[in-house]
Image 1: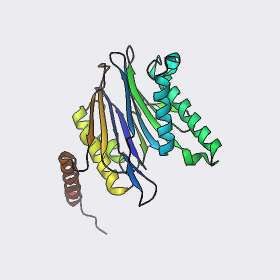
Image 2: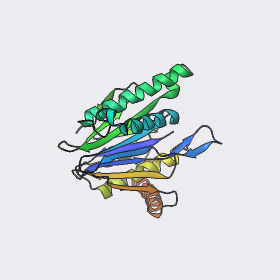
Image 3: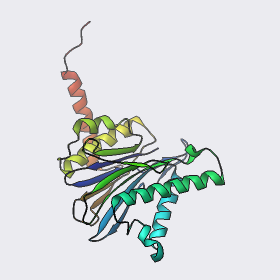
Length: 243
């Protein structure tokens, strides 16, 4: 399984994803689920992938392959005129891959299902964030829904719902996401370290801070242990229940 999150902040866009994939308890691997394309001074686009690994890899490979063919470049991530067109391109490619795989083998499309979060900024426009479904359709983040999750979302969602503020700094947002991912990691073994992080600052039009957070990262472990202690302390300080 997977856990991916993207936030739309006043400062820019923040992305985080895990890297675990598994096909059973004895077959666990690490694969990147965050991919970034950029044209310096013009655009930065990041995609987070969740779902069937063969499907997501095929989609990313097609997006890459079509971007290097000059004749087709106008219909690619590197030249699409708006982020809406980028999201539509990703949705069409995802739908194409799922349909092709279903035709060539099994007939259950859910077997090949995948969801993608697409975010970025193209010069002359504001940053935008989209959640793309297996059917190829998508929705856009708004002031009412300023973040998206994909994959194993339920364990880390309450943290974001309570703590998220679009005005928060990247540093505070990363701390919040560490807590969200820590809660998910402890609840579901199908989500695992290392984590990938990308912080894109608005109007820079260049790849932002990108880091991989390993399983032995001291700051992540400090957040995990302190959050556990804070929860225990908060529980102890709540009013006592009485029959």
